[in-house]
Amino acid sequence: MNDFFNAAMWETVWKDESALKIDRMKKNGIDPARSFDHKANTFNEQSFSEEGRKRTRRIMNWLEGQGVCFEDASVLDIGAASGVFTVPFAERGARITAVETSPPLIELLEENTSTFAEDRVRIVHEKFEDIDVQSRGWNQAFDLVFVSMSPVIHNWESVEKVLQCAKKFCYISMPVIPTEHSLVKEIWPLVTDKPYQSKLTEMGYLLHLLYLKGYAYESLITREASTKEVAREEALQEVMTWLGHHRLPVDERNRNFIADYLTQAYPSGKVAIQSGGRFGKVLIRLQDQSMYMREI
Image (cartoon, rainbow, N blue to C red):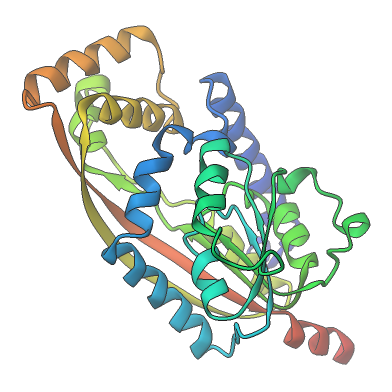
């Protein structure tokens, strides 16, 4: 029971588990920061579709309901992608520093933010992990630090670096379970001879460590789902990426096997994919944390 309240132990377990996962991905040739490159256009279309905009508005309305004000606020959007949140932040009057490293996503981000004044959106083409927060002048420099579904968050040290940039609020979202993918579930037993089973992810470490370290925060767990239709080749690439994430061989044998299956199962060349799952959102109040530390 004592270990339940041992923050150092939770930090170590999260760090070790994350390091193993990242190492396996690298061995399978997957760079987490570049895993969206091949589907940047599809992601952009989904993000700015009517359904995507509704999801974005729900999250922003939730933030405003918790006291976040976007008008003239400074926002650090880490892992900004094609601007799914950068654009509405700017539309509501915020000044955004958008950090993104994927070349195809940067191109879309520049296009999507081209109508805003130069001082409204600044794009940083660097990995957040490589940025020295202190020398860059980002220490407590932003009213809101926003990190949505980004591989930047992978252990407590990465959380601390993100929190270091925030003056008032920090928002982090992560999957509670790996995003469920209908095609992966379909192909998984063919590749492994076992049914697909979801596993819990690092969201539990994040919430528990925030609790142990005395942070004030609100959290929300939602279940979300969407459907898309993609070309067979894109479906193949998605499945191969997923296999890598799940520690399965991303080799020529599996690629050829899955390609043959898709050809037989989807002769039209189009594959309908349902994806979704449980997602966690947490808004951390840094002002309350400062007050708490002064009282201690």
